[in-house]
Image 1 (cartoon, rainbow, N blue to C red):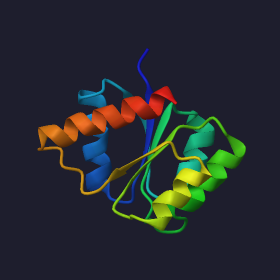
Image 2: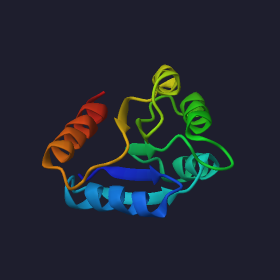
Image 3: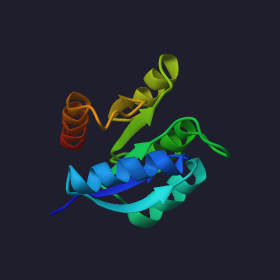
Image 4: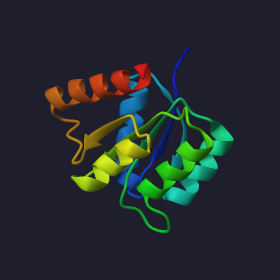
Length: 127
């Protein structure tokens, strides 16, 4: 059965790139797109996806706060951070329960990046 994915990113362009990747490269079903942490939480509750890709820097409520709230209510959630933010914020997200981290920029034209991204997603889903 195909995995169900929720993509949360305030960049419509990036969300579309991730969506295309998930559908074409991974054969996953993208069930929702969110633009901020509030939408991430609401969509997670409604859709209960197998995987969430979460940006950190977003308006209204950031990704870190959304991860915290989702993990408190759904400790089995599988969240993968996809962000340009590095360092302590990334470590904090892992402590909160994120299962993986992919750094932006996403280089979908680079075959090595594509393979690494696929592996990261597979590892996160095996958790």
